[in-house]
Amino acid sequence: MGQTGIAALLETVASLRDPKHGCPWDIEQDHQSITDCLVDECCELLQTIDRGDMEHMEEELGDVLLQVVMHAQMAKEAGHFDFDSVCHEVNAKLVRRHPHVFGEGKVKDSAALMEQWEAIKAAEKKRGPETIGRFKDLPPQLPSLMFAQDVYKQIVKQKMETGDLLDLEGIAQTKAELEAETLGARLFEIAAACQERKLDSETLLRRYAQHVVDTLEKK
Image (cartoon, rainbow, N blue to C red):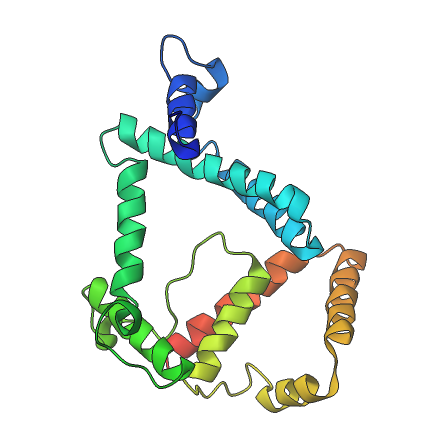
C-alpha cells in the first residue's frame, strides 16, 4: 500500500526543510516569517466557503493544512513537538471538553453547554473565575470587527453595565429594524466615510473596542 495523504505531506515538508537537499526558501523560513502566509491562506479558504465553491475549497483547505504542517515541522526540528503530538493534543482537548458526548455528563441546552465549556477551559488553564478578566483572552492579531463582536458578546453574556460607552438600547432597536443586507450597507458606508477622511477604519474600531474593554475591566 502507498502512503496516506498526510504521511506523504509530512515527508514532503520535511524534505523541503532538509538543510542539505531542501528548498532554499523553505529552509530560510521560521514561525514568524510565514505568519502572513497563514493569514492569507485562511482568507482564501473563507472566500471559497462564502462562495460555496467546493471545487476550490479542497485546494484551499490543503493550503491551510500546509501551514500547520510547516509550523509543526519547524517545532519538531527545534525539539518542541511534532504534527502527531499536535493532533493528539487537539483530539484530547475535544474529548475533554465534550463530557456529554464522550463521558457521562449531560447538558440540557446550548446555554448550559457553553457554561460547561468555559468552566472546563478555566480548569485547564488552572485559574479560577476570580483570576479571569471580564473579557476572555483574544488573539492580538484578531481583525478589529471580529474583536469588537467578541467584546460585545462578552458584554451581553455577562450583562455588563456599559454606561455611555455603548447605546445598548439603540443596538437592540437596530437589530430589530434592519435586515442583514442593510447592516452590511451601513458598515460599508462607515468604511467609506473613514476613507474619505483618510482614516483607517480598522485602527479606529480596534482602538474603541479596546477602550471599551479597558474601561469595563476597571469597573
